[in-house]
Length: 72
Image (cartoon, rainbow, N blue to C red; front, side):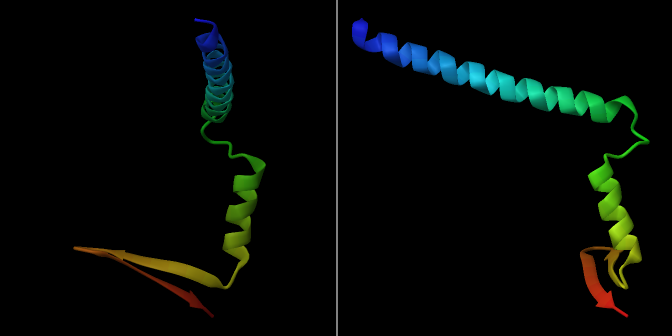
């Protein structure tokens, strides 16, 4: 029984770390979902950068999705 004591403690410690990680993800999702019209600053920066570039993605949806990338 003494040999299992260390294994059980390690497993419990790992589960506690995982639960903390899950809680952090849930907290982040709650913050993002609180106001769906407001993007995080990094996401907004990516959109702004993309809109300023002369290169664009064009996609056509039909039987298959076809995409092309062009720079003008």
